[in-house]
Length: 480
Ligand code: HEM
Image (tube, rainbow, N blue to C red):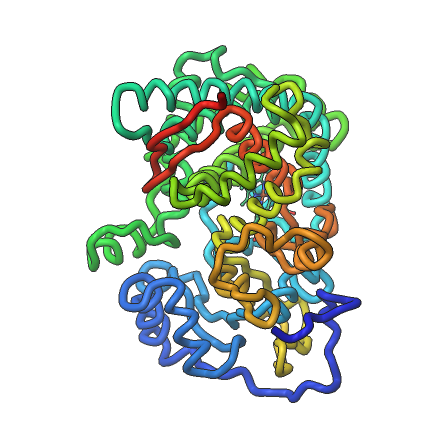
């Protein structure tokens, strides 16, 4: 491992000493090039090989390629991107002086605004747009205010969740994680962000999470692999967008729920942040559904899966020891402050995010011409070009992370571990950064890692050991 950029770790200033290199790779023939790359991406090579094979081929972590969706029915979508696949080149995605993020979420493709009340919600806005400032600040304010009730609500909802798991385990060999987790997430975020209790509406309490699932799935279908037999997936899932009317009923019920049960938050959006009621509702649903519910639905099964089973006894023992030393087994001792003192638990969470970033790809468009540097070369980027970073490769950059493929529980501990947080990018920014209205970093950068740490701490207060396997909980040994 070479020493990583020391004093200004994420500086995107052009170093004079590196050689200028023409960006390797090409977009191929019109229509055929994008189509071939699309088939490689979704079918022949798949991720991460699609990117790692091209790194090898071009002997460069920066190259030109196409990413889906594209031809034949996504005619307005330009699939041409410049891939940035090492820590240093990827960091340019966060420098809002040189990149912009208007209508950029999944490459050049953006789900139709009919899914979000015919408006561009926060995620689609660039930092230069005043509306981004209003909504980002609104989301930061929601998090700040809900932090007062966050931990007690979390513990109460976790009691219900693990009660369900234990009951399932008493009847069968394993308890499937996802359905119960999604109900837990929906209740938790409704109560904390919206100040709205789903039990006020039996239909929302039972099906709210399923309405969000359907709304998310239909928007993201053209861009994610779901493992359907090929070429059926290419033809029926990745070739066109499905119409909104298929999920309209559920989305409208969620709107009604927010309107009637989240009155206080809606009033604050209008009085303190000058948003209209409509803007507040659709942004709240996007933050609740896409960001929070969507993000944690991917992240939590991975996090719990990393606790593993009896083969991970040593790691579980270390985590349990730290938790019990800091907070014993009394759940009233759990707090943001107490988990901040759990270095190992936090490192476990960071390492999980490093190896399995829940939002794997990030994109940004060049605001102007600039020189982009990787570890060993400098490349010329033209205004308007789309940069594409694929984190699962970037977070294994061997110039930054020792034994990058290995899950190392202690990686983010001590001085050296703290320094590495400069290069942990899951939130569309470094873990040492601060989400503000001037950047596009996840508003919940700290809330996510602290909540995940609280969940791990909760588990080791309650249980001596746990076993997770293939998306299920297979056994728990209660704390003596
Ligand atoms: C595990 C859970 C989460 C993950 C993995 C995650 C990840 C991300 C990522 C990668 C982005 C940047 C997207 C991009 O432009 O490329 C983002 C943006 C955002 N996230 Fe999160 N997020 C999570 C949870 C949350 C939660 C709980 C909130 C609640 C407030 C939240 C609020 C936001 C907002 C408002 C933005 C847009 C920021 C902006 O436009 O400036 N996220 N999130």
